[in-house]
Length: 222
Image 1 (cartoon, one colour):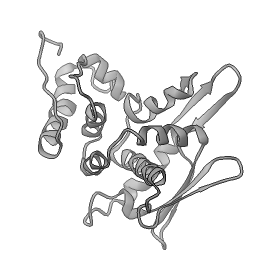
Image 2 (image 1 turned 45 degrees about the horizontal axis):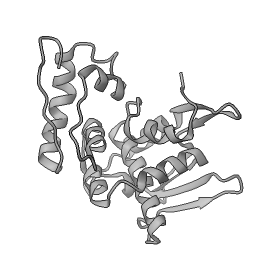
Image 3 (image 1 turned 180 degrees about the vertical axis):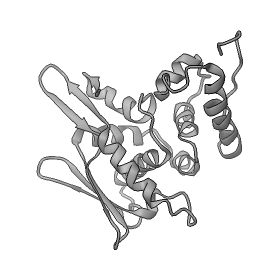
Image 4 (image 1 turned 135 degrees about the vertical axis):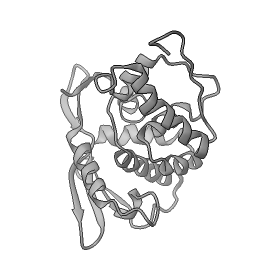
């Protein structure tokens, strides 16, 4: 069932920060490249080599990117995962209803993968474009570079939450489960800690200027 949103300002949160979607690593990298492209547009700088964003008559954007834009490094050849990420993003949508207009918006539309040329093509609607544009204004370039290197989507999610924060953030384990969309997958807190909290912290400690601490408040909770 699609998430229901009644305010355009909330779309950014659902896509990039407190999203309840369980994005894969490659889905997040696609979104990060969009953020990077928006930053370059704002600053009047060149886009990632081979990346183009074209506006249509209906205010949608057509995005073309080389497959290399989504891969972690030169040794990464997970083309199948990139295609799956495009399909999964296409299948994620939300209902927008502000009392005047109701519409169902897919995160991306019409994804294509060109084997011969090695690029992908997809479209995004104005609401998604503007949400990513607003997010890009507050996400610093070095943070984006670090985020692209993570191999865990949960490291990425923690990193987004902590980036630019001046005060400590406190979340209950149940809040994190809901935020990451895994409350049904990891019903037991020890499993959630083992599969998500510990690996994410280890990767953040190794690659990021940000990390976090966690503690068990009492048995079964943290």
